[in-house]
Length: 542
Image 1: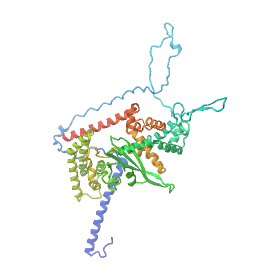
Image 2: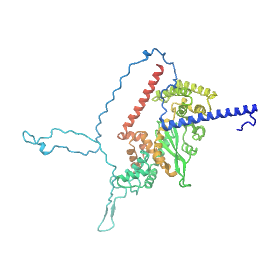
Image 3: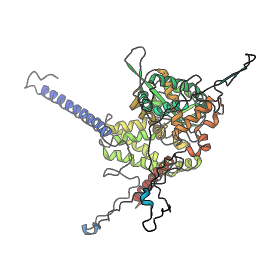
Image 4: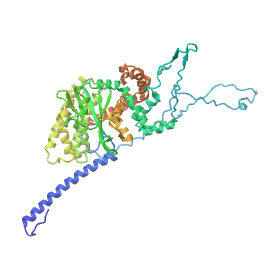
């Protein structure tokens, strides 16, 4: 921007002033945008990760009847509520009977056993028993298999010996010729994919028990086990793609580039989550986020895929017309308005209030059948969605809502995906959001913070197979160790009854391997959420 050549030239001064004003306005908008992004990053870094609704002064209610009139201050004062008493800690429950007992006999000395009156030894009239739980580090042991040979001492021809793998008690290893038994293989799988421990930490754990198993050896074990588990995992995949609705989500992972040693490239893990009719989590691995991976996995799928906006805009999941239809996640759209609250608290609160109404309806319909849920959505959710759509159109036409502001981006995001966001209104089996799939994918993202990257494409494929097995078991609150160990033993023994090894079927046959406390936690969280939403609904109409 050049200064006017002549200070007395009025037109030049006015033009120069107009340019300054335009520049200042542009910088102010840029400054506001950067402030919003900075606040967003601060909240993500230091604030709570949940975007659960918390009432504040900016929040609006869907059916706002207005607050009560303010009376005298004396009438407003209420007596202080008594401080709630702390609940006493429950007494520890009896330790399980199946745990091995190490008995300690505690008796008085021989001198104290003698009665001071009659001088005779006092008999035992009772015993007080107390229990204390203790722990020993994992113990490695060796199967020493002695296959005796028998031969005739006369003819020198007849020889008899038990064939390898047919010893009493069955197989001791899932891989013929391996130096490691079922327990070691199970520990490697559970340690990395359920407990999120990198293989180098597995080295330390085995060393603590008495023997170092190098990480490259552990990876080779996982490769062999992936081949053994392949038929079971293929059955899970075939069942998932048979359902009419599937949840799809992905996350990035760094992968070592074999072409450029020491360099990393971005690969993807994909999660395909079946609904209640096929309750399995199937993972897949691809080198990129292109459509080749989902198109191949979903080649036999016909129905609705619950996805984010990327899957819709770039057609990742829409490989074939009239075969796969997208249903967008409303939680993603709602989250945009949560991020827009610092930009325009009142407008964002208006959108959030309508989303609260939609989610309250879904909460009531949680236990409904698909037909009953569809009827409720058509009756109550559809009018709210129409109101939300009209409000979005109004905000999109409002010149005061800047396109690059957080509110403007939230409005455009919802409008661009509106057809896909509304799909769930016409089908009772489609969820309102993809949160359940995101929660299942979190099992992998937690582990990624520890093992950081995959070493090769084959390593990613093996990891996807193991996460399929472990995540599907954890989804049903199973003892993952017991489930994986039983799968390995039966598959290595030649069993082809893969149906019985599906985690939901296996759960019914092994009730003692169910983590009942996980079931109780899930029910408790569900009940707490219902009660919180009921109180909020009652507060609106009060």
